[in-house]
Length: 411
Ligand SMILES: *Cc1c(COP(=O)(O)O)cnc(C)c1O
Image (cartoon, rainbow, N blue to C red; front, top):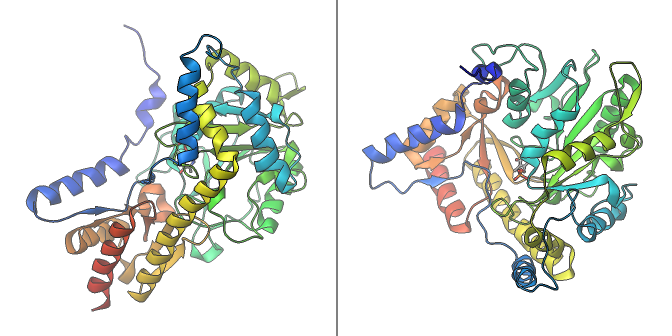
């Protein structure tokens, strides 16, 4: 019989979201009249910007005419899109990033996992705790960890706890680690990293020959002008960092699929014979072999993000979600809860009151307010005692959910 990849058996089989669904379904079955509001999953709710839709409709028409039809595109993405990204997302912020260093893909989630294809299996890997589960699970699947313990921590990973005590930015480790996953603005905590903190990571990585895997999926939500949007705003990042970006959250492309990964040509890793190898060439080879590009139609939609109309429409979308975040922060604070995040990110990270566990608080919100959020412990052991509330929702749902919570907790 054919054998399987046994590392998959180590995975904590998708515990968090299935367990949330199980509890919500059980409550809904027992309380059929309860109008449940979901502020849980990190998906956008508002429609695609008009500029993107118009560009995609035009692209469909292009596909209907032999003279403008597009078959396979470049595996790296169309140059007209990569040049706009290089100019407006990077060079405009002083980042020395060229279009040839940008690779268009169908998602940052995939890229975060796929990047492991070009990296060795003997690297020491650090993640924050709590963390976006994709970074951990893709390493488990690749066989980079041992089994997990009761708290869901895997042998062989270095966990860097983040909490209110350290402003939700991990201490730079004493030991040398080879790969460090950083996500700022952060999912799930909504925290951001200062220029000084990111510079310290870049300096650490360059000193140890480590690589930072920097997930900037939420950069568009930054409101504080002192906070870097890209790791390449920091001196020295071109020799130690890969950056992941996505159109999912800024332009509502979660269902449309378009993202990008930046691999600078100056970034190197060590081969078995001790020589230094360009990671850009390896990623190019990997993508050319295993990926056939994002559809022409979707790339035209992404290109429209960089038009004047597109820019103002995505700004309006982001402002809408951030107003939701402000309402959530204000109302929860009024209800006497301690809240973090939600200022430069669409997530509010709530300290559970009275020492409730994350799941206790989940059950309380569900049963008393009919509101669903995400237990912090689902993102890692150090997320215990916290709870994530997402600002991705309609204004009516946010207002109603907050009214119920304040009514319950104030009294
Ligand atoms: C939503 C999200 C992404 C984007 O993933 P896509 O596959 O591009 O939709 C990346 N990283 C984090 C932490 C996210 O929450």
